[in-house]
Length: 426
Ligand SMILES: Nc1ncnc2c1ncn2[C@@H]1O[C@H](COP(=O)(O)OP(=O)(O)OP(=O)(O)O)[C@@H](O)[C@H]1O
Ligand SMILES: [Mg+2]
Image (cartoon, rainbow, N blue to C red; front, side, top):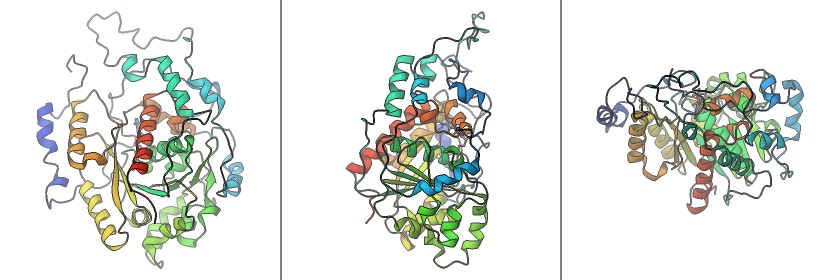
């Protein structure tokens, strides 16, 4: 390790990386496709890469006493079933984000007896902290201000609404790159700022349903019913509690069989498109969270969408396999959906302590140009904690860097939708 606050990458120096990045097999003209679905560990966290937390975790007393994975409201999935009935896509009821979340975002006084993050090492004069409080989280006053802006309790701050529905397919066949996290947080950010948003969980893992705290146990009507049994979206969509104007079509384990069952179904590639097109003008945004594969489920998402949003993790293998995804997108455009385009690239899990992250960012920006959002999502522990409380980071810790970055990304997407003729349905 050097004293400049960056970690050495075990694979070599920064200059090594640059030369290696340019020779990704996935990017060579006519090169073979990379590996698929062979992403990093499930949570994408490299041991030792997470910085020590400079401030105690801020969460409500309720959240602290609640076991991980417990529903935020303490109700069983069964009682939430009724949410489906109220999910008819009716005009939004003016509803504000929970006041608890706003209160929690305010600076807290120091907890008596709390251990200072660097207390143990401060006696060691040679210790140089890798991250300062300022680096990891904004100063408290700024943080509280950002939290209010993000939760938008007054409803004053709005993001521009597109003229027509923008259907965005969030896809990358590599696993664990942040597809679900991106879907959930962008959807919440846009919904908190005056947009009507539908999230379609198209991954049998059901992570987006979990992240939005929407019941998705066996027996709950889900996206499988839309695809295979032609159930209208309206009958399977559920309202997302605490977030006005946000709906979610959940995925249950039934969806795992859909890839095979779809093979023998008429118009198997356009089942989802048909379901979405039955509701023209109901939503400003439809986000489709894809599974980490390029099978029929992802093809259905690509046929239903006009825009593809590709989250790219700022890691060494980030670009491998992207060629395969781009080829599939091109095939779908040629044969099934001429309006499809890659409109947005989002860099996720950026770790500014590594030169590797810089190198990957440069590579991606060089290749995709202004499709890459200026906002970059940092690796942030609040982002990974939020789903275990059935929340997005926007509501779990709205002052955190993770929330701020997703808010900025959402703002950029909304602005682009107004300025550029992308993503508008005919
Ligand atoms: N910015 C971030 N900082 C820290 N952890 C993150 C961040 N983004 C995502 N994670 C964590 O990384 C893991 C993978 O994220 P996520 O589930 O969103 O990826 P995915 O691409 O949807 O995965 P899959 O391919 O399995 O569907 C999760 O545990 C998530 O909490
Ligand atoms: Mg996912």
